[in-house]
Image (cartoon, rainbow, N blue to C red; front, side, top):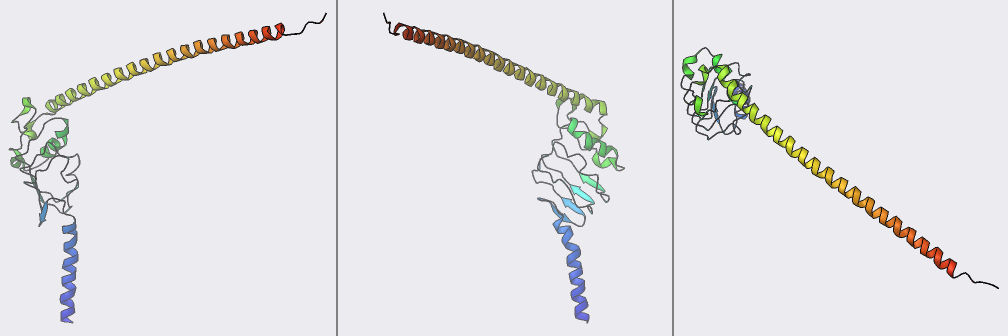
Length: 205
């Protein structure tokens, strides 16, 4: 009986431990509520899309992160802190989520070294202390570029449509010309046939 209880508790611990292991995102390592993703050369595209709900600490320092996806930290009720230093953070529209999350933290002193690497006007600035106006200004530039690209695409589309329209008009005129020539040829052939028939009618005296 005692041996059975021993195996029961061993099985229970194994089952309890499996979700923690299986929930650890690649290529990070997990231990006691700590998800260590540091020194993994992670980019904003290769960053794990989710973390275990039991996560208390996330280490993301010394990577190549420009931003983090919106909402990635919203469903971690036990999260206490996240290490973000030594990443080339790009402070534009994409950084708004991280900026908002940092401002909502009680231990703001932990994030005073999390600074912008680019763009040049904001380089070296603490992300947490940026104003929304400064970030929205970068968004406006992005929207202007997008609008310019959209207008350029629209112009190219109109030019292509114009070229196709001209081609269709020229093709129709050519078709009409060929049709007229065909009708004239058919009419001439019919007249020649009628003349030939008339000339070959036998005359009786």
